[in-house]
Image 1 (cartoon, helix red, strand yellow):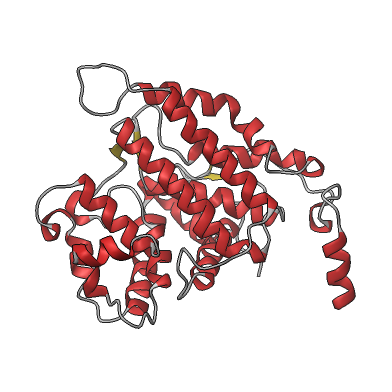
Image 2 (cartoon, rainbow, N blue to C red):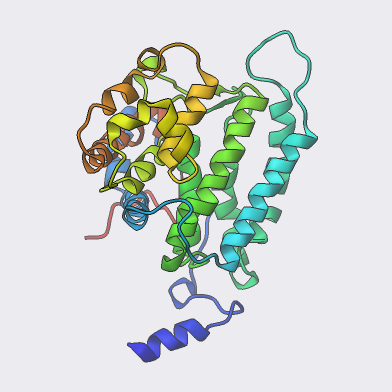
Length: 324
């Protein structure tokens, strides 16, 4: 076993992982076109792998602060650089003057850049021996930033970014020991860029349930953020509606960072504009919050046709049923 690990460790970037030799990459496409198709999705290898990925990261971040130490690999650094480019493009593409106060059309210009450059950006992260994977993986990046026609963003776009990261794990660009950095560095940076997009271009929440949804735009940082707080010695779920607690701790916990963003963007009593979260603050423990949010994520996002009809399936996240 140790010998095999050494061989793996010494494998250079110039070699393809053995599991991918002869693998045929394909451009992901939509497969869920009617409500009955949802059964295919829930039985699919893609669903099993996606959910497995979300839960593995949930376990990895349990009880850990955003500021705790973790390994930052070269692949993580390259992903941060990619997200920095997207951020810079926002500065280079200011909102245009327009009569409508929603959905600034400059987003379409910004998105056009990504549409053109996505494969080039992804090829900076994926080493040359795996270049055949670039067109497949790049599709998920393009899907992860919102819809250029409707100028909206929602949990389906967020899921596409998680799928993008999941694909990078499947082709072994990201490794098991990158897990903390995937959430704390890469996903957190993605959130910053998405919040900047949402504010700059006044993006509409996609398929928002308004006050009855968990959040207008995101879901995963609440799952992983609640896992970070499991068994916390002082902070309990009831504390996240306390402004002082949020201000003092948001740099350490993703969940509180989300709450801070909501309170900056919305006016009025928290219980009115974020009723679901207000209800969650009454749950006694963070582990119960975490388990409840995972169930809610499956029911409200992954099992909803309006979200999953846009999901794309390729060779890395296939629609084929799970192999027994």
